[in-house]
Length: 315
Ligand SMILES: [Zn+2]
Image (cartoon, rainbow, N blue to C red; front, side, top):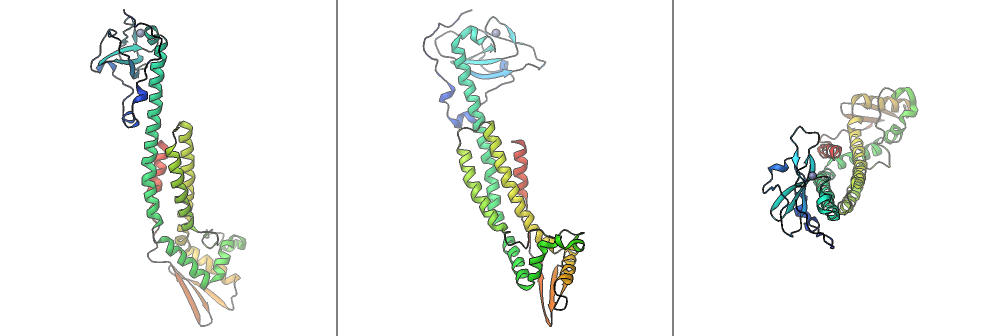
C-alpha cells in the first residue's frame, strides 16, 4: 500500500474556509459510510490534499465491520476522508499510520468545524425560541389587563382606603382570614406588574442581543443563557400571579373575609362593608360606593411562557 510523501508545510485547512451559512446545515457524521458515493477501497493517488469529511462511530451496533484503506483492517469507528471526488474510509487509529502528523491537522480542522457547527446551531435555536417569545411578551404588554388592574386598585384606594391599607396586613389579624388566601401584593404600593413587564422586556432584548452575538456558545454559555432566561420566566410568572390577584380578590370567600375583617376592625359605627357577586360595597351614612370586578378583565394566555419553558427543558 502506498503512503503520501511527507511534507514539511502545514496542511491546508478545509473546514476553516467554509462559511457559517454552509456549515450550519452540513452533515458531519454518517451512520452509513459505505452508502456514500464515490467510495474507493484504496488510497487514491495524486497530490491533492485530503480532508476529513465525516466521522462515524458504529461501535455498539450489530453491523458488519468496515474495512479501512490501511491494510483492510476491520473497524467500526473512523473517518470518511475526501480527496478530490473520491472518498475512502480510515479507521480511527489508522489515520496516523498513513498521514503521520498531518492527520492531527486534518482531525483538528474537522473537530473545529464540529464545534463551530454546534455553536451555530445553538445560536439558531436560541434565536428561534427568543424571537417568538419576545413577540408574545410585546403582545402581553399591549393587553388591556394592566389598565383594568390599575383601575381596580385606584378605586379601592379611593373609595375604601381601609381595605387597601389593611388587606396586605390581613395575616396579622389572625383567625378571621385564616381559611382564605388574601391577595398578597394587590394593594401594596410597590406592586407594578406593567412596569415590571416593561423592565423584563428591555433587559431581555439587551441580553438576548449580547448572548446571541457571542462567538463562544460553549456548553457553559448555553447553560448561562438558560439560567438568564429562567430568571426572566420567573419574573414574568410573578407578573401573571399579580394580575391574577384581581380575580382572586373578587372570589366570594375572599370578598367575604375582606368584609368581615373590615366590619370588625374598621369603624363599625361609621362604615359597613358588603360582599356581593363580584362586587364589594362600602356604606357610610346615606352614602355608598361599590367597586366591581371589571367585566372584561382577562389575563393574557401564558402560551408564550409555556412554550419557552418547554424549549428550555430540551435545549
Ligand atoms: Zn485501519
